Structure formats: C-alpha cells, structure tokens
Length: 153
Image (cartoon, rainbow, N blue to C red; front, side):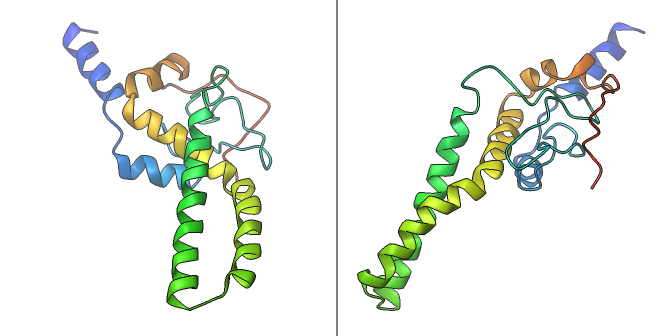
C-alpha cells in the first residue's frame, strides 16, 4: 500500500463525528463509533466492547464522572422548568408541587443513568475522534469473536 493510501485511510479513521450523529447514537444507546452495537447488557451493566467494531466502552476509573454532570444538569433543568410552568403558569400550590418534584428528582436520575452515560461517551467520541479510534480494536476493524453478542434486538 502506498503512503498516499495510508494517509487517506487515516483521514477516514480520524474524521470527525458530527454532533447530531453522536447525539442520536447516544439517545439510542448505541456504539458512538459505528452506531450498531448496543452499550448495555442489562439495566446498568455495560458491555466492555462493541460487538460490531470492537470499540472499548469501559475506560479508566473516573471516566464516566462527566455523565453525572449530564444527568444532574438534565434533572435540574427539567425540575426547574416544571416548577416554573406548574407554579407560575398553572398556579399549582407548593404543597402539591414539591412532593411530586422531589420524587421526580429521586427517580429520574436512576432512569436517565444509561442515557447520560451513553451521551457522555458519544460526545467524547465526537470531540476526540483520534482517542476514540485508539480504543477500537485494530483501528476500527471487526473485533475478535466474543461470547457476548450485543447488537441483536
């Protein structure tokens, strides 16, 4: 293979992932690199790698700390908007409103956990495509056969 072909294939591998595509893959809980493999084995248990492209989901300790900021931010935004609309717009009293919003603040982050983690991983791949390629097996090729197939629905 010539040097020109090597440079072209490297450019394709390190090409930026559009933010819209990254967000869509994050919301669908799919691999941010290829968009096919599923991220989660069970409710909160992630696969180690994508079954399609071999991208490594599990990173070092503390990597997913940023997902807690996404989770907190979305929870706070939804709670604030709900309070303003229901209290000032629809004139609901605090005695009715606050227990419901408190319950929402406890339950929603648990339900949204998977999406926050997926969004963090997707946005990271969008921002740092080179490092994302480094976490895939052989630069984006097919992974070694594993006992966990995770892209069947």
